[in-house]
Image 1 (cartoon, helix red, strand yellow):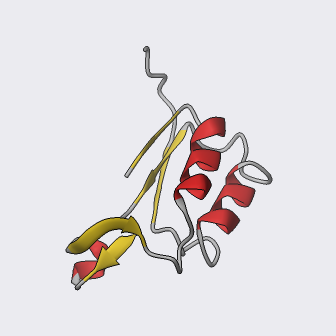
Image 2 (cartoon, one colour):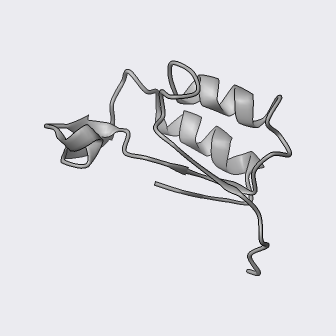
Length: 81
């Protein structure tokens, strides 16, 4: 896969809305052409360190579900977590 030179959005799941669902609506709505991909910072249950100390690898319910991640991934060129 060839990666194009595009801007990547790096964000926590609750910075551009309350959760991943709201992030998906922004990325596939008003921000649809603004980014070539999205890097979503940790969204797992965490004991600290702003999510970088996951206690398990299940999505924290306050952020959403794997279906929300899949919805974001469907429209973006690539995504990272």
